[in-house]
Amino acid sequence: MPNNQHVPTSVRDEVAKILYAEADALDWERLTPQFKTGQYNQWAEDPRIGGLLARFIPNPIGWIKEVPLKEYARALENMGRFASFTTLHYAAPGDFVGPTFGRQWEYVPDSLADKPAHCLATDGVTIRYICWGPPGQCKELLWAAVTAGLEHSGTPGIALSVRSDAEIDPSLQRKHKRIGERCGIEIKYVVRPLRQRP
Image (cartoon, rainbow, N blue to C red; front, side):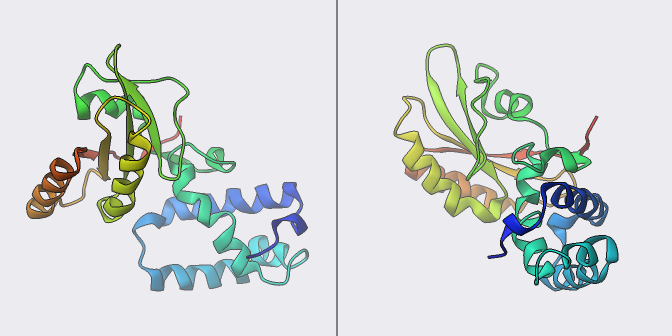
């Protein structure tokens, strides 16, 4: 893994801001691995990015992939050290927990955390663990909900997060619901569009 300690903080932040602005414009989360590989190469050759990084580290591509771009999904969730560098963000859990799991459930302030993205919700009596991510991460989210859910009395919840223009496969949605019922976990789909940061 690239050594972040060799890149001064001011340079790291300057490069991350450029990368995130371009990643936002490219809709990075939806790009194919092949396209991302080509983009990493372009960034490594860009004097503002790879040229600047090469003054401090021998492998700019590795650093780009493993430091700022590895944090990009977290930044879209308003988490991590680079969160303020993206111009886009997803709705906060306070905006979707109640509408998704029932109006009686409210986000517990300051309970937002990651790995996976999660929070606590309360109905005023019971506390429950809720995590979210794309449908392709359902397996990891299930494990998180099962293990972390043991610490709280309420039924764990999983919000399978999709963008507003995503096509939801009804058979996969039914399958996820059945899996949740079998595991004692409430699984819901939630549309979370990317928004411009104010």
